[in-house]
Image (cartoon, rainbow, N blue to C red; front, side):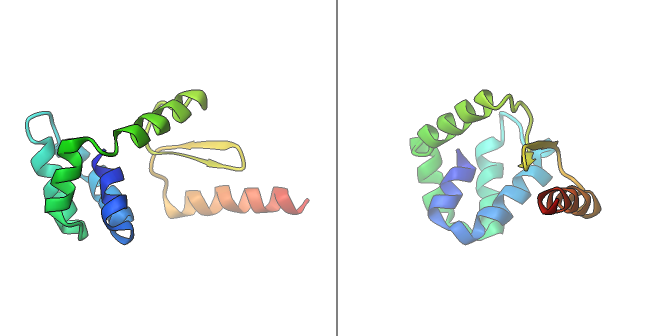
Length: 111
């Protein structure tokens, strides 16, 4: 929900915020989740007062639930998961791995 809130509050900070959440997910737990998400939001340039309000009100929950349903419909059960021309890519990939996947997709398209 916090990630969706961040997008709504400051779309230009969304990618940095999402990256920080993934990079710090092992330090986030049930007892510190709100504080950690607000701290990471501040690092990414998201207004923490607006972020706290959005998180506490669960304003983004309908979008999260819709995304979860879409993921279920596509059999996505891990994050991050990406699709390149229908090929499923699970996890954070290296730049060279992305270059290979995208290169293969472009080559297949040109055939």
